Length: 136
Image 1: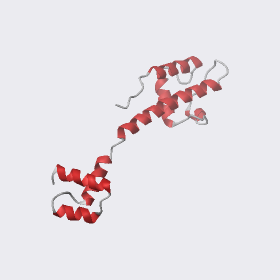
Image 2: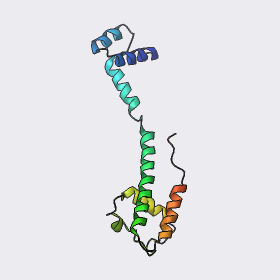
Image 3: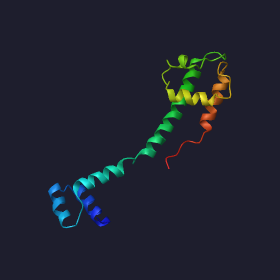
Image 4: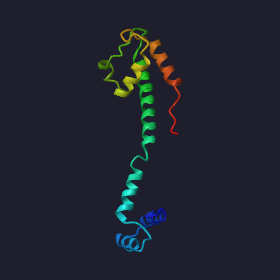
């Protein structure tokens, strides 16, 4: 069928035309079948919001890591060695596996058995300096 028939069919779907109307107009060559219009719309909409979901996931990972760092810094009273092992951080409110992985990537240059407040503050600064992911 032609592009014109597809456009007419799309308008008919949105205007609430019945399947019998589609069948009648398809026999005249004015539009395509109703099930074909619905199938085409599902196909077009399949990955419609994939970019937005990736953007949202990146923003949530960044904000979750930032919240986790702030929570760890808030719990520490003295400037001593901070335990950033997975088992010790799992009880935190803002803990998630993505935030933990991002934190470990930020602390990659440091010895993970000997993390101080200064190291966490530096990781927080690095995270804040990162270019926020844009949607477009």
